[in-house]
Length: 216
Image 1 (spheres, rainbow, N blue to C red):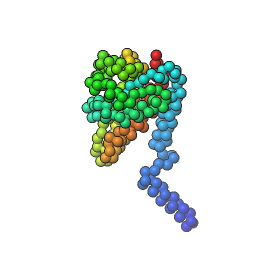
Image 2: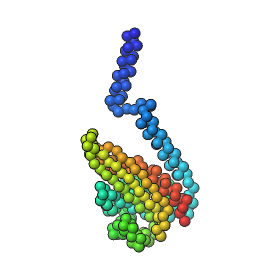
Image 3: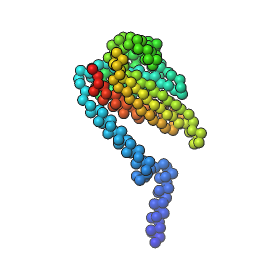
Image 4: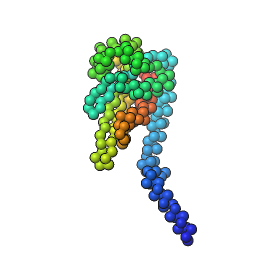
């Protein structure tokens, strides 16, 4: 009897320790739902990345420009988005597509012309595309909102990414969007970048699939 009691006590203590450390058991409904959602996202990404892509469009150059709307304020200085742009560029290049580096874009395109992309100034945007000899432009807008949760007294970050891929004439080829959110420590900006990276694969997969099917 004492042996059975000891075993039961050990199991209870182990369960309590696991819960105290934030572990989730396999029958946790939230963990199961998260795993199911991830599996579904991964299946969609795999399907999109298997889209056949003609060799003749793989060598066309894509210019990636990004702006951020942070707590309602729009920021378009490309030097502040090197890590964001490279995160997208790296994934596109791994799929065999060609992109410009942020440094190449800044060397050829004036900041006023970058601003034009986000103000929907078609003439200025077309001028910038021609200067870069870019056949496609991928414009990304990242909206981020950081604040402090009043109930549990921690920082929290929410992000939304919206991307539009157009050809040099302005014809829409693809749109892709994703959301993410998390609690954050003192490095709110770093957490925002982590959240973007977590959703970048599904954004790029959507853009790649549409590009391979719709590019002329």
